[in-house]
Image (cartoon, rainbow, N blue to C red; front, side, top):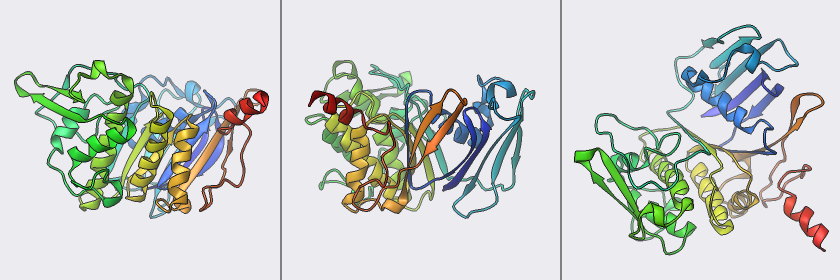
Length: 339
C-alpha cells in the first residue's frame, strides 16, 4: 500500500509531501495539479509512462533547478522508488531502493474512457490485470473473473448472490434503477458485447459505459483481497462520477468508500460534490473510518507559478474542520446570490 508521496520541483509542485490513505480524494480547479499528481504515481510505477511528457525543461518547475518524485509503502521503508530530473536532462534518473513493488496490483482509469461501444476486444492470449486505462478491456476483464465469488458483504448489492457478475449488475441498477447488465463473447472474432436492460450500449447513453469499468475493477479487486489472492491493490481514478445523475454520483462515492474499507487503495480526482458527500455519508455511517481517508484541495497561484495545497480534515461525523475557498462550495455561492 502506498503510504506517502513526495513531489519536489515537479511541474506546479515546488515541495509537497502527501500522506496517502485507503481513500485519497483530489479536488481543485482545472489545471491545478490533480492529473499531474496521478501522473507522478504512474511514473513511479512504470517508467514507460514518460511518453509525451517531454524533457526536463517540460517537467521541472520554473521555481527549481531539478525535480524529485518519491514514494514509500505502508512499511514506511526509505523511499522505495525515486525519480530525478535536471532541467536540461532528456530523461530522468530512476532509482529503486527495494525490489518489492509498493502495490500488488495497479490500475489507472482515465477520464477519457470509451463511451458506448457495440463491441470490445476479447484477447485470448493475454492475462488482463485491469479494465485498462480507457476501460476498453472491461469485458475481457469480466470474462476472466466471471466465475469469481465471495464479494465482501459490505459490497454485495444483492442478498441473492456473492458472485461478481450478479453484483456488477446490481450495482449498476443502484446507480441507474431498472438497468441490468449482461455480456456475450464472440470467441471466433475475438470480440465481446455488452447489453444493458437487453439493449445495446449505444441505446442507453454514456453514464453506464463510463461506470461499468470502475464497478467491475473495484468489485473484482475487493473480492480478490477478501479471498486472499492479492493484498494491496492501488487504483487511480479520474472523474468516476462522469455522466452520472447526482443520485448516481452519491452512490458512486459510497461505493468507492466501501471498497476502500475492504482493502482496495483508491486515489481519485473529482469535481463532484455529490461524490464527495457519498464518501462523507460512508464515514458518518461507520463504513470507512475518517482516519482512513484524506482530502487534498489544489489551488494554482499564477503569480508565483505554483500550486498551493490545502488538506481539510474529515471527522467521524462527516464534517470538515475547514472549508477552503473553492472547495466544493459553488452551490452555496449560487444559492447565496439567488436568495
